[in-house]
Length: 245
Ligand code: UDP
Image (tube, rainbow, N blue to C red):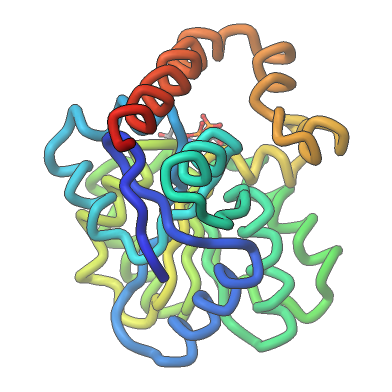
């Protein structure tokens, strides 16, 4: 899959179908841990501040265009047909695919009650889903060896990390070499909160229009600090486009 640089970050030439096919290939090939991170305008500014994290993003196997910002930017800069692949939707589609194919899943992250409610919700949706282990996201560093042992013993092939960004990306970069059977690891941020129903996903209208960020801003005004960068991002992309001509 082609990777496009967008300002300071990158995004893969992706759509939901291609992303799922890639996940299937990663699991079926059965080699190494593959990382899936979400690329969005906010991270374009935060990730490069940490050289280690930046390198992790550069080396990620799949950088999904999580929001409309990356999609529009890559279309404007490269005339591509990149489509939105919201991490939250990809996770749920991977769960469906895993239920059909018998892939084993481990879910790590979020508060205990949120994690449990999300696991229950997935089991209700897919009777054949194999969630072979789960853990809330508030363990101490001392407890990590035990968690790694549990993940390995569970033989999970897919690991979802719901620790928020950049904690989840840091976790996988630190522990990936100790994972024996995991083939795909996706950072899913607040997806378990959505599945558990503690955070509402934007109504369909906002999702279809690609303005989910606007809904989140209205419903969680404290996100303004994070989203304030969006106009700068747009201006910089337009500037980059003009300079390329
Ligand atoms: N979280 C966690 N452990 C931590 C910090 C956060 O499990 O030490 C969880 C938190 O409970 C929430 C998720 O990580 O479920 C963060 O969601 P958020 O929407 O902030 O993530 P984003 O996608 O914006 O990075």
